[in-house]
Image (cartoon, rainbow, N blue to C red):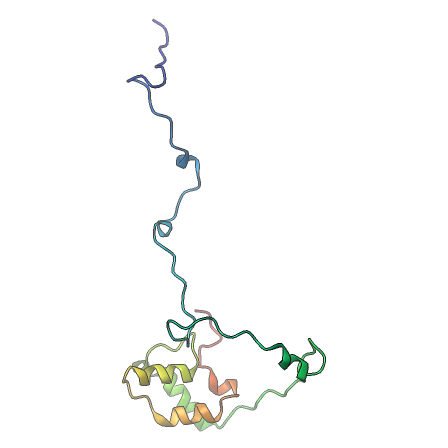
Length: 142
């Protein structure tokens, strides 16, 4: 007897493969809804930040002109840096990667963890100095 092929739609026929079988494999995360992450330091429910005022650029003179170069701030007192290093190493105030020291101090205060007051005072006093603002691990990626 010869080769017998079932007629499509008959009981012995195999159904055609669904079109999804030919697509790229899906990830398990594709089945969950996507959520936008909130930027650090922003309260939930707040809208987008205000757009930069174009009049401020006019005050600088030429549009697109870079601001005059500034000398990088010098490293502060070694005793201050040691106090901040100890704050960075104190894990009872939570992780410090991805945020500034002041954000970490404020988060610890909000959680009732009683961070040291002199650290906050030093951070506010030297706010423009990156040696003080950022933790020991700020150069490392998350």
